[in-house]
Length: 219
Image (cartoon, rainbow, N blue to C red; front, side):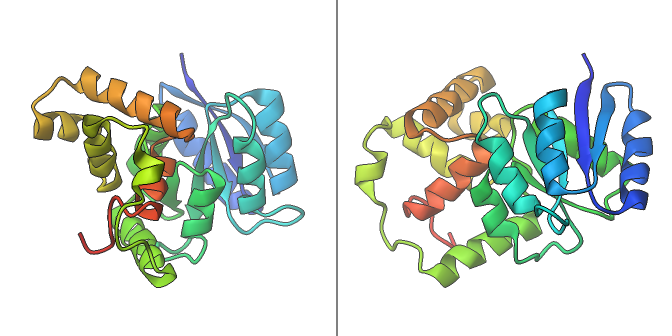
């Protein structure tokens, strides 16, 4: 089964370029394009893609608002936000809106296709520079100095440990190696964490871990 993608960007050259690159991949198919956020929401509803590539700055409805509306739906597609700068001021708000990650518009063909595969598989895509930007934003906002245990009480000790490792950017395979357990066990833990905390995906889990003070900027 191909990964179905919708590209939302008000620049025709960007849409065409990304479409050509993605359609050249045997496991990815671009099923639609949108020129603004309103159309992106409509295409996401009608075409049921697995991934939406979402520009932030678009007319009619911006990418942040469109992302929020798309991720409010049950069984929504992953949203991969396109940005020109890796220190974009929209990073934090886009993650809060439900984006699964970020991709620079000047990404290579391989980076683009790999990014689509990553978020389609339910993983978070946070480049190191974006992660640093996110951490800096929490520090600026005055992140909690100590964990808010009341918000973490529903998790087991191991689940809390896994959440902390997810927030530090480790993949399931890396967490499994760190904890000396099977990767499938880690996947099970992550699934239970998301369910117990009512979170959409791993990216939301990262935001949650910082907001509760489980992980602090600089650690």
